[in-house]
Length: 120
Image (tube, rainbow, N blue to C red; front, side, top):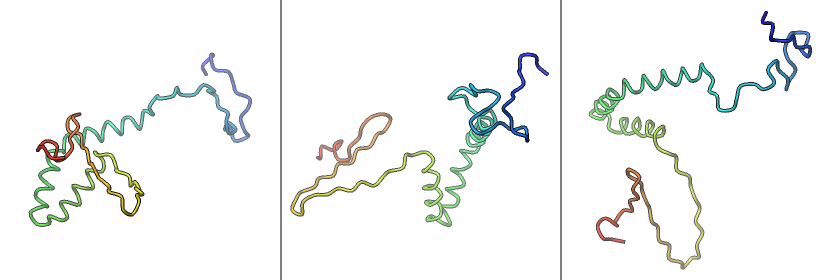
């Protein structure tokens, strides 16, 4: 037994610490990743990096026979790369004119459809 560790007296009969108490009151510092979860993430990232070119081929191959299925797979994968959009309710008077402007970002640059053609 390590001489630096003092025996803890506040354990239950089963040898467990009561809720809210531990042998290490300071615990793991905030922001320190769990080592197992970090290893799993690294493994998944490596697998995704290695198979990314194959995934594109698979979607194209699926699209030849099943375009709808390929689009569904593409949309499902996009959810992991693109932020989800949220619905917003807009209330206006019955006779009010409502103008919608949609702005996209490409490479950090703001793009509003129509503006590059001199419209809007």
